[in-house]
Image 1: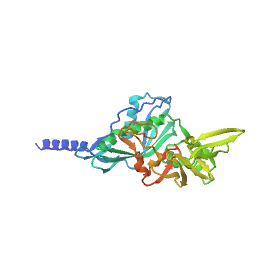
Image 2 (image 1 turned 90 degrees about the vertical axis):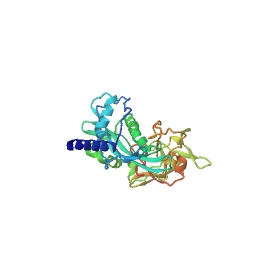
Image 3 (image 1 turned 135 degrees about the vertical axis):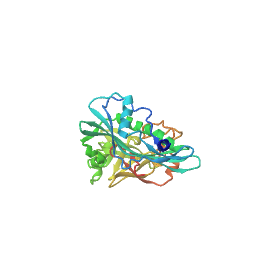
Image 4 (image 1 turned 45 degrees about the vertical axis):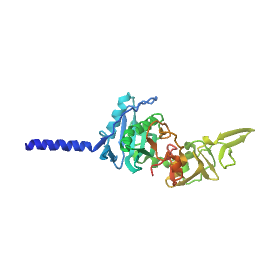
Length: 338
Protein backbone atom coordinates (compact mmCIF):
# COMPACT_ATOMS: atom_id res chain seq x y z
CA UNK A 1 0.00 0.00 0.00
CA UNK A 2 2.83 2.39 0.88
CA UNK A 3 4.54 1.73 -2.46
CA UNK A 4 1.25 2.33 -4.28
CA UNK A 5 0.80 5.64 -2.49
CA UNK A 6 4.34 6.64 -3.34
CA UNK A 7 3.74 5.89 -7.02
CA UNK A 8 0.48 7.84 -6.91
CA UNK A 9 2.27 10.80 -5.31
CA UNK A 10 5.01 10.71 -7.97
CA UNK A 11 2.38 10.59 -10.74
CA UNK A 12 0.47 13.56 -9.30
CA UNK A 13 3.73 15.50 -8.92
CA UNK A 14 4.71 14.83 -12.54
CA UNK A 15 1.28 15.88 -13.81
CA UNK A 16 1.32 19.03 -11.67
CA UNK A 17 4.79 19.90 -12.91
CA UNK A 18 3.75 19.35 -16.52
CA UNK A 19 0.79 21.63 -16.07
CA UNK A 20 3.07 24.50 -15.00
CA UNK A 21 4.76 24.52 -18.43
CA UNK A 22 3.47 26.03 -21.67
CA UNK A 23 5.56 24.59 -24.50
CA UNK A 24 6.16 26.57 -27.69
CA UNK A 25 4.87 24.65 -30.72
CA UNK A 26 6.93 25.27 -33.85
CA UNK A 27 4.15 25.04 -36.43
CA UNK A 28 4.38 26.41 -39.95
CA UNK A 29 7.69 26.37 -41.77
CA UNK A 30 10.94 28.22 -42.33
CA UNK A 31 11.32 27.12 -45.92
CA UNK A 32 14.20 28.74 -47.77
CA UNK A 33 12.95 29.76 -51.23
CA UNK A 34 16.17 31.53 -52.18
CA UNK A 35 19.20 30.26 -54.05
CA UNK A 36 21.28 30.32 -50.86
CA UNK A 37 21.03 26.78 -49.44
CA UNK A 38 22.40 26.25 -45.95
CA UNK A 39 23.76 22.96 -44.66
CA UNK A 40 22.50 23.31 -41.10
CA UNK A 41 20.62 25.67 -38.81
CA UNK A 42 22.45 26.47 -35.59
CA UNK A 43 21.43 28.61 -32.63
CA UNK A 44 23.81 30.36 -30.25
CA UNK A 45 21.82 31.23 -27.14
CA UNK A 46 23.26 34.45 -25.71
CA UNK A 47 20.24 35.39 -23.58
CA UNK A 48 21.31 36.76 -20.22
CA UNK A 49 17.99 35.57 -18.79
CA UNK A 50 17.01 32.13 -20.11
CA UNK A 51 13.48 32.42 -18.65
CA UNK A 52 10.99 33.41 -21.36
CA UNK A 53 8.24 34.32 -18.91
CA UNK A 54 5.59 32.96 -16.54
CA UNK A 55 2.10 34.03 -17.66
CA UNK A 56 -1.58 33.43 -16.77
CA UNK A 57 -3.37 30.93 -19.06
CA UNK A 58 -6.99 29.86 -19.45
CA UNK A 59 -10.13 30.99 -17.68
CA UNK A 60 -8.59 30.17 -14.31
CA UNK A 61 -5.49 32.26 -15.14
CA UNK A 62 -3.20 29.43 -14.18
CA UNK A 63 0.41 30.59 -14.07
CA UNK A 64 2.61 28.65 -16.48
CA UNK A 65 6.22 29.02 -17.51
CA UNK A 66 6.70 29.37 -21.28
CA UNK A 67 9.47 27.06 -22.45
CA UNK A 68 11.13 25.69 -25.56
CA UNK A 69 10.38 21.99 -26.26
CA UNK A 70 14.03 21.12 -25.57
CA UNK A 71 16.75 23.68 -26.41
CA UNK A 72 16.71 26.54 -28.94
CA UNK A 73 19.48 24.88 -30.97
CA UNK A 74 17.73 21.49 -31.19
CA UNK A 75 14.27 22.96 -31.75
CA UNK A 76 15.22 25.34 -34.57
CA UNK A 77 17.42 22.72 -36.24
CA UNK A 78 14.53 20.21 -36.27
CA UNK A 79 12.13 22.91 -37.54
CA UNK A 80 14.54 23.80 -40.35
CA UNK A 81 15.03 20.19 -41.47
CA UNK A 82 11.26 19.63 -41.70
CA UNK A 83 11.06 21.81 -44.80
CA UNK A 84 14.60 22.22 -46.14
CA UNK A 85 17.10 19.98 -47.85
CA UNK A 86 20.56 20.68 -46.41
CA UNK A 87 22.92 22.44 -48.77
CA UNK A 88 26.69 22.47 -48.64
CA UNK A 89 29.48 24.31 -46.86
CA UNK A 90 27.60 27.23 -45.26
CA UNK A 91 25.60 27.09 -42.02
CA UNK A 92 22.78 29.43 -41.03
CA UNK A 93 23.41 30.76 -37.51
CA UNK A 94 20.85 32.53 -35.33
CA UNK A 95 22.22 34.36 -32.30
CA UNK A 96 19.37 34.68 -29.80
CA UNK A 97 19.90 37.76 -27.62
CA UNK A 98 16.49 38.14 -25.96
CA UNK A 99 13.04 36.53 -25.91
CA UNK A 100 10.92 37.77 -23.03
CA UNK A 101 7.13 37.71 -22.53
CA UNK A 102 5.08 39.64 -19.96
CA UNK A 103 1.51 40.78 -19.40
CA UNK A 104 0.35 44.23 -18.34
CA UNK A 105 -2.80 46.27 -17.87
CA UNK A 106 -6.31 45.06 -18.67
CA UNK A 107 -9.36 47.11 -19.65
CA UNK A 108 -11.68 44.42 -18.33
CA UNK A 109 -11.94 42.78 -21.74
CA UNK A 110 -8.48 42.66 -23.28
CA UNK A 111 -5.09 42.41 -21.58
CA UNK A 112 -1.87 43.89 -22.86
CA UNK A 113 1.07 41.59 -23.47
CA UNK A 114 4.63 42.42 -24.50
CA UNK A 115 7.26 40.40 -26.30
CA UNK A 116 10.85 41.66 -26.15
CA UNK A 117 12.70 40.31 -29.16
CA UNK A 118 16.37 40.57 -30.07
CA UNK A 119 18.22 38.31 -32.50
CA UNK A 120 20.93 38.35 -35.14
CA UNK A 121 21.69 36.00 -38.01
CA UNK A 122 24.98 35.04 -39.64
CA UNK A 123 26.27 32.78 -42.38
CA UNK A 124 29.06 30.51 -41.16
CA UNK A 125 31.74 29.12 -43.44
CA UNK A 126 34.46 27.08 -41.78
CA UNK A 127 35.03 28.69 -38.40
CA UNK A 128 34.17 32.27 -39.47
CA UNK A 129 30.88 34.19 -39.41
CA UNK A 130 29.48 36.89 -41.69
CA UNK A 131 26.51 39.13 -40.85
CA UNK A 132 23.05 38.67 -42.43
CA UNK A 133 20.38 40.49 -40.39
CA UNK A 134 19.33 41.61 -36.93
CA UNK A 135 16.26 42.92 -35.13
CA UNK A 136 15.75 44.52 -31.71
CA UNK A 137 12.17 45.45 -30.92
CA UNK A 138 9.14 45.09 -28.67
CA UNK A 139 5.84 43.66 -29.88
CA UNK A 140 2.58 44.40 -28.10
CA UNK A 141 -0.49 42.17 -28.14
CA UNK A 142 -4.04 43.02 -27.01
CA UNK A 143 -6.43 40.13 -26.47
CA UNK A 144 -8.70 38.41 -23.97
CA UNK A 145 -6.35 35.43 -24.04
CA UNK A 146 -3.17 37.39 -24.55
CA UNK A 147 -0.80 34.76 -23.11
CA UNK A 148 -2.04 32.12 -25.53
CA UNK A 149 -1.82 34.60 -28.41
CA UNK A 150 1.78 35.56 -27.68
CA UNK A 151 2.98 31.97 -27.40
CA UNK A 152 1.13 31.02 -30.58
CA UNK A 153 2.85 33.84 -32.48
CA UNK A 154 6.42 33.15 -31.36
CA UNK A 155 7.03 30.77 -34.31
CA UNK A 156 5.36 33.21 -36.72
CA UNK A 157 7.62 36.07 -35.63
CA UNK A 158 10.75 33.93 -35.90
CA UNK A 159 9.58 32.68 -39.31
CA UNK A 160 9.37 36.25 -40.67
CA UNK A 161 12.74 37.12 -39.19
CA UNK A 162 14.45 34.00 -40.55
CA UNK A 163 12.94 34.25 -44.04
CA UNK A 164 14.05 37.88 -44.23
CA UNK A 165 17.57 36.71 -43.37
CA UNK A 166 17.47 34.08 -46.13
CA UNK A 167 16.89 36.82 -48.71
CA UNK A 168 20.03 38.75 -47.77
CA UNK A 169 23.62 38.16 -48.80
CA UNK A 170 26.30 38.07 -46.10
CA UNK A 171 28.03 41.41 -45.57
CA UNK A 172 30.96 42.80 -43.63
CA UNK A 173 34.16 41.17 -42.48
CA UNK A 174 34.47 37.54 -41.49
CA UNK A 175 34.60 37.33 -37.70
CA UNK A 176 35.27 34.69 -35.07
CA UNK A 177 32.82 33.09 -32.64
CA UNK A 178 34.13 35.30 -29.83
CA UNK A 179 33.29 38.43 -31.85
CA UNK A 180 29.58 37.54 -32.00
CA UNK A 181 28.99 38.38 -28.35
CA UNK A 182 29.34 42.09 -29.08
CA UNK A 183 29.16 42.21 -32.86
CA UNK A 184 27.23 45.49 -33.11
CA UNK A 185 29.76 47.40 -31.00
CA UNK A 186 32.59 45.83 -32.96
CA UNK A 187 31.39 47.01 -36.37
CA UNK A 188 30.22 50.44 -35.21
CA UNK A 189 33.85 51.53 -35.05
CA UNK A 190 34.10 51.06 -38.83
CA UNK A 191 31.44 53.64 -39.75
CA UNK A 192 32.69 57.19 -40.56
CA UNK A 193 29.36 58.74 -39.48
CA UNK A 194 29.86 57.40 -35.96
CA UNK A 195 33.30 58.91 -35.60
CA UNK A 196 34.09 62.39 -34.33
CA UNK A 197 34.52 64.04 -37.74
CA UNK A 198 31.65 66.36 -38.82
CA UNK A 199 29.01 64.94 -41.16
CA UNK A 200 29.29 65.70 -44.87
CA UNK A 201 26.56 67.91 -46.31
CA UNK A 202 24.46 66.29 -49.00
CA UNK A 203 21.67 63.85 -49.87
CA UNK A 204 21.77 60.23 -48.74
CA UNK A 205 19.49 57.69 -50.39
CA UNK A 206 20.01 54.83 -47.93
CA UNK A 207 21.44 54.04 -44.51
CA UNK A 208 24.59 52.50 -46.01
CA UNK A 209 25.61 55.71 -47.77
CA UNK A 210 24.76 57.75 -44.67
CA UNK A 211 26.80 55.70 -42.20
CA UNK A 212 29.64 55.45 -44.72
CA UNK A 213 29.35 59.21 -45.39
CA UNK A 214 29.10 58.94 -49.16
CA UNK A 215 26.40 61.46 -50.23
CA UNK A 216 25.02 61.68 -53.77
CA UNK A 217 27.41 63.47 -56.06
CA UNK A 218 26.57 67.02 -57.07
CA UNK A 219 25.20 70.14 -55.42
CA UNK A 220 21.61 69.34 -54.53
CA UNK A 221 19.21 72.05 -53.39
CA UNK A 222 16.21 71.17 -51.24
CA UNK A 223 12.80 72.38 -52.39
CA UNK A 224 10.34 73.22 -49.63
CA UNK A 225 6.58 73.79 -49.95
CA UNK A 226 4.48 76.48 -48.23
CA UNK A 227 3.99 74.17 -45.23
CA UNK A 228 7.72 74.01 -44.65
CA UNK A 229 8.01 70.39 -45.80
CA UNK A 230 10.85 69.13 -47.97
CA UNK A 231 9.36 67.88 -51.25
CA UNK A 232 12.43 67.05 -53.31
CA UNK A 233 16.15 67.63 -53.86
CA UNK A 234 17.25 69.12 -57.19
CA UNK A 235 20.61 69.59 -58.85
CA UNK A 236 21.36 71.24 -62.17
CA UNK A 237 24.40 70.35 -64.23
CA UNK A 238 25.09 71.25 -67.86
CA UNK A 239 21.55 72.55 -68.27
CA UNK A 240 20.05 69.25 -67.07
CA UNK A 241 18.02 68.93 -63.86
CA UNK A 242 18.09 65.83 -61.66
CA UNK A 243 15.26 65.53 -59.14
CA UNK A 244 15.05 63.19 -56.15
CA UNK A 245 11.60 63.07 -54.47
CA UNK A 246 11.53 63.29 -50.67
CA UNK A 247 10.28 59.72 -50.22
CA UNK A 248 13.47 58.38 -51.84
CA UNK A 249 15.75 60.25 -49.44
CA UNK A 250 16.93 58.40 -46.33
CA UNK A 251 18.45 61.54 -44.81
CA UNK A 252 20.10 64.80 -45.72
CA UNK A 253 22.79 66.85 -44.02
CA UNK A 254 22.79 70.64 -44.19
CA UNK A 255 25.49 72.70 -42.48
CA UNK A 256 26.53 69.60 -40.58
CA UNK A 257 23.03 68.92 -39.23
CA UNK A 258 21.32 65.66 -40.20
CA UNK A 259 17.58 65.15 -40.72
CA UNK A 260 15.96 61.77 -41.45
CA UNK A 261 12.91 60.96 -43.54
CA UNK A 262 10.04 59.47 -41.50
CA UNK A 263 6.30 58.90 -41.79
CA UNK A 264 5.87 62.32 -40.16
CA UNK A 265 8.31 64.12 -42.46
CA UNK A 266 11.97 64.90 -41.87
CA UNK A 267 13.00 64.84 -38.21
CA UNK A 268 16.26 65.92 -36.59
CA UNK A 269 18.80 63.12 -36.37
CA UNK A 270 21.08 63.56 -33.38
CA UNK A 271 24.00 61.53 -32.07
CA UNK A 272 25.26 60.42 -28.67
CA UNK A 273 27.63 57.71 -27.46
CA UNK A 274 25.11 55.02 -28.52
CA UNK A 275 24.69 56.25 -32.09
CA UNK A 276 22.18 58.28 -34.11
CA UNK A 277 18.66 58.75 -32.80
CA UNK A 278 15.37 60.57 -33.35
CA UNK A 279 13.32 62.12 -30.55
CA UNK A 280 10.07 60.40 -31.45
CA UNK A 281 7.63 57.62 -30.66
CA UNK A 282 6.09 54.91 -32.81
CA UNK A 283 3.17 57.16 -33.66
CA UNK A 284 5.57 59.47 -35.49
CA UNK A 285 7.31 56.65 -37.33
CA UNK A 286 4.62 54.20 -38.42
CA UNK A 287 1.29 54.73 -40.21
CA UNK A 288 -1.94 53.91 -38.39
CA UNK A 289 -3.41 50.55 -39.39
CA UNK A 290 -7.01 50.22 -40.57
CA UNK A 291 -7.73 46.59 -39.67
CA UNK A 292 -6.53 43.65 -37.60
CA UNK A 293 -3.71 42.68 -39.94
CA UNK A 294 -0.55 44.52 -39.00
CA UNK A 295 2.84 44.87 -40.56
CA UNK A 296 5.75 43.34 -38.73
CA UNK A 297 9.43 44.27 -39.08
CA UNK A 298 8.22 46.60 -41.85
CA UNK A 299 8.21 43.53 -44.09
CA UNK A 300 4.86 41.76 -44.18
CA UNK A 301 1.43 41.68 -42.60
CA UNK A 302 -0.75 38.74 -41.76
CA UNK A 303 -0.20 37.95 -38.09
CA UNK A 304 -3.65 38.66 -36.72
CA UNK A 305 -3.70 39.99 -33.20
CA UNK A 306 0.03 40.74 -32.99
CA UNK A 307 1.17 44.29 -33.60
CA UNK A 308 4.36 46.20 -33.05
CA UNK A 309 4.03 48.46 -30.06
CA UNK A 310 2.40 51.73 -30.94
CA UNK A 311 0.55 50.71 -34.10
CA UNK A 312 -2.31 52.69 -32.58
CA UNK A 313 -0.74 55.75 -34.06
CA UNK A 314 -3.18 58.43 -32.94
CA UNK A 315 -2.81 57.51 -29.30
CA UNK A 316 0.94 57.01 -29.44
CA UNK A 317 1.66 60.19 -31.37
CA UNK A 318 0.13 62.23 -28.58
CA UNK A 319 2.26 60.47 -25.99
CA UNK A 320 5.77 61.18 -24.86
CA UNK A 321 8.78 60.92 -27.13
CA UNK A 322 12.09 59.26 -26.44
CA UNK A 323 15.31 58.37 -28.20
CA UNK A 324 14.72 55.97 -31.08
CA UNK A 325 18.06 54.80 -32.46
CA UNK A 326 18.85 53.95 -36.08
CA UNK A 327 20.50 50.55 -36.38
CA UNK A 328 23.67 51.08 -38.48
CA UNK A 329 23.60 47.43 -39.60
CA UNK A 330 20.07 47.50 -41.04
CA UNK A 331 18.92 51.14 -41.14
CA UNK A 332 15.86 50.16 -39.10
CA UNK A 333 14.54 51.63 -35.86
CA UNK A 334 15.82 50.02 -32.68
CA UNK A 335 13.21 49.83 -29.94
CA UNK A 336 15.16 47.49 -27.69
CA UNK A 337 15.55 50.15 -24.98
CA UNK A 338 11.79 50.46 -24.36
